[in-house]
Image (cartoon, rainbow, N blue to C red; front, top):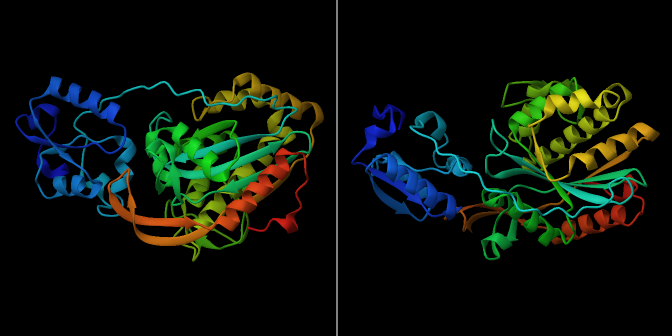
Length: 373
């Protein structure tokens, strides 16, 4: 704890360190081995995140060995966790991402790209919860794009957790391949590529574009940053856009409206990026955002898309759709070992998403009146 008086890893010698085998056990085992090399401590394992966090707050243990990707799991029980605690030492591990791309000719063939937004600042390589989940279906021939927003709390089968059901957001702590496989499974569509971003990424990308204009159907003040949003068009720099896409408490529909706002920002970014003033200097823009995001779309594929747009400067039709569900409290989360709020999918909306996605993939044409939210 921050008020413990401990300043370095040596200060906890002889103490008890809490661990949990929830999440990625391979990384946990490596961290335990490195910790033991550094200091002599006893380990106490906990099989739920609630007991794990409580042990630190109640003084049962001296410190905890925490996977940063699971930090957000304390939000509900210990909302001031970040302020109440401090890091004595960090261990960093790199795991080579599996190649899960399904490559196509992106200038000729339709494709799906999954946007996974993780709930952290700083380096994009950090493994963390997938709090933004959006499938973007692109048809370069019909010039139509469909964005499908998926709630973070969606209660879905996760192949990487032995096909147990859990929140979609929790799939992120097992790596982006887990999130992709989970989404492919319940949407029943192939996902060709992914793009992984975090809080810092969004700020940097919006600022590199020179800001964006975003339509909001609501007037409100964001919790993060206290930005005034008005009904209608809003100019946003990176920080304001971040406050906008993170907001949910200002809306009666909560996370549903947050998902729609995330799509509004992505649409605004696409429109700005393909504008003549920006796309003609794409090299400097790409240099500015280098390292801000992770994707398994190759640089040559990205360049091909940009060259296609430069050659024809066509306009694109962009559509938005959100799958929905019913809230369900006190549902077991196998990854975190406690009961939590989940959203049970409305299968009719999932089926409609599948139909809309396949329309774009199969060279059909979407019309707005047949979509809705």
